[in-house]
Image (cartoon, rainbow, N blue to C red):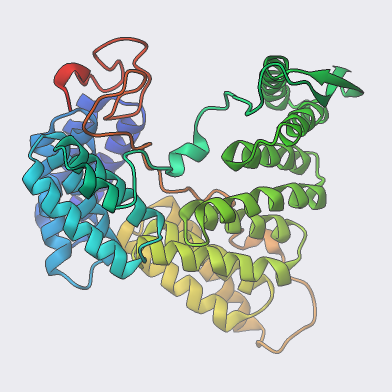
Length: 458
């Protein structure tokens, strides 16, 4: 590894940690230093592209839109004129650039880029895809701000979009039943791991209070290792949601909570049943080609992997990899992780040729995205090395003996989903949350997270 490569990794890691911790001054210094090291790389080198992307992201969150625009324009230009690069990334940065012009009140340029991005999304993903809906919603917001109500309506969208962040957001429950109507639900009286359940008729406010109290207690119990007690409380909350007809992401998260603690108790088969219910809701709500759905396929594969049920795990892991590739493009870390996990499944089933193909492809991506010294790359190389060692000693047709699965790459279950800030209107700042970073304003004009002045009237 060259000196520039080593230095770039150091600066990059420091910047990413600072970004996660919202230490933006420190992140800026590290990213500028990383960009200087990139002078030794090609413009299309993954390290240069990542550095530009993180600089654009940094300046977006600190409301320095002029600097964000400069780096985002560089990215759009590089991806547009180099067809070997991901078209999905070209689309993502085109949308980002339109949003930067939008929030900067340069509406003519914003409209131009929205139109371009919308053309790309419709061609690449289809008009019904989540990304297409997002662009239409942002464009409709712009047209509405100009008084073009008819034009905005013709787009068939509104300024608020359901994004992945909605599935990771608040757990505060608002039940869709009138306060006067009583509904029979189970209420728990529990101590330790014991459970007593009574059937009570409760009104909407009472049910909401029970739900919130149970949720907090269950989370504390889970964190303290009292999984059976947490399971009791999560089950009661799930019953409340069903009785009051709550669906969508809140119900999906409730199923996942029960699944999670059952997995921790070693009840993997029961955990799968609850997780499958959550998965059905995601597919119905978000469609089959959404990153959240892909992540869910991967988690299901992980469950079956734990049971050594590779026959059921393999097609799920393959779906996860296929969706990630469709959404993110070929050269993306999420794609590499998904392919690594799929290759692991081939490996443990002794499908050595498929496993080797997967390891090679994942290694190519991780080398370019992370570099050869990154822990993710090294973990993959260990898996691949183990495969080569085994195939050198045993032919593919050998069905005798057993393999030590612990020495191989394992399905991690840690795949991330694309973190998309919950998109609100870019034309009018919301009273409750910051349009730039989504943080709670707490009634203040200046965002406590990114420092944005909400009185600017975007």
